[in-house]
Image: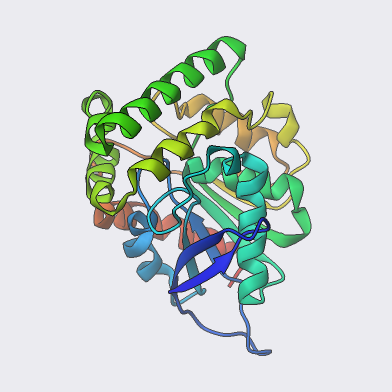
Length: 271
């Protein structure tokens, strides 16, 4: 486990599962960023499945888990991408394979666009929707209401009307993370809903590194977007498996996705 500081000096936290070292004493780490709601624990079983290939680094995204950040103004997509680079600088990695789920896919994509020289490859699980103006307005209202409940009634109350609508896996991961969450920090993190990740998918056309894409299964993580992104990127690859209702916990998540990720890393010379 390690602590590091973002580009703004904010203290942040990451879990590290040490992997093999290269001939010069370093490897290119695999950095996996969790979804919105859970924390780094969602990826611990997956990290254990892949740690024989790479050192796996699992940050608590700013605002979640132990990366407490109660200032809403510090929650921006550009800052989240900068946090990834600050993490790489802290561990002495020039490049990394960067990926994640949900929220983490957007952070990975923003990092690849802003810092292509630092991203060796990407693994994207359940890519978040790129909203038009109407959907973005609805997203802002949704996140503002969530933050208001979190501030005034606590995290359990904030999630109460949302959890019944979530896939069983996501619901389980969120419920597990709630006791590890700081209410004011989670409320502040909801401010990301007011920031625009991308205007349209064409903004991602310049991403040239090998990218493995797993389709999502709901309106906020549309399967069509995953397919469109795989077709757009010159080295995009749509995974043969996808998130489904049969996956119910972090261990099942690891069993479902680790073999495909392993094959991608090996086939693309990332081992």
